[in-house]
Image (cartoon, rainbow, N blue to C red; front, side, top):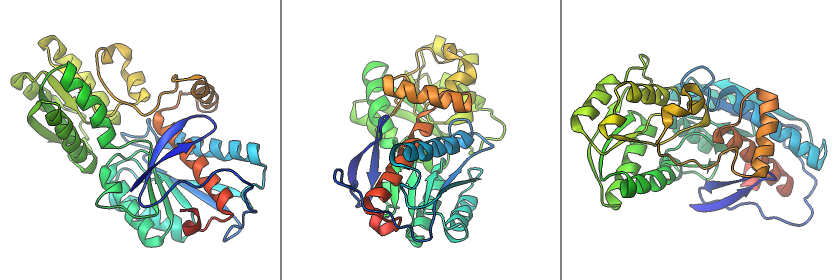
Length: 347
């Protein structure tokens, strides 16, 4: 596994590839010859449930923006033919994600799939990508199994993973907020990997996870009261909440309703998006600790991108939106330099 810097004209994100290095820079790119006369980029994600706001349809817009900006820089025919962006809603279901990925690759002749939140769905898509020998740029799923047990040369893990989140928040919170942790997590691949990564970070830095409990995923009721009441009974110094998207919003809302902060139980969040903060308001997250790979206000270039995204979509971009833009740009740049959309040539 190699870690490579993924550079765009707007911002820097980290990509991890299994046995693959970044395409070389410099020199004149060869004329691109597309295998079937067009380039098809497929965005597969949650467009209707708990992860729709943080990624969803606006991730599709991010990829379309990348295509438009790429053509503006290099010319309308820079990639040797038309570029089509297609999309589908996987509803956070691994079996549906797998079938949609197969449909994209086989029926739509997609050259690459992007995004795919929900780690169990991402692992399913990674298997299809490996079997089909087609590119998959994972953006929003966090499980380290994508570059570990389920690694293949056609899958790129872009932007972040559970190890990064734990190494940031888990380490800092243990050193500064308290050694005694209670972790709650969604009981599927992402949450299980988050629990494992955070437990490792807490223990490595002298802390102890006194207990951890899983919650149903999807949590159709939105009720986390049983776990939060248990936190009040256990009285940890830190409550580690590993839920994401709409589920996390409900956890934070109920954390405040039960006044756990007043009981000196500090909240450390595993994965937080700007859309979560918008949903409840900044006051609901006062004092919360979290780690993020990118934020729209980090520098002038990021703010310029965010302003353009806001004008197009009506919202500021999350790091998932930025990651989809950046990954799509990098993929097109790799094709331009390779002179082909053949997956092995691009990898």
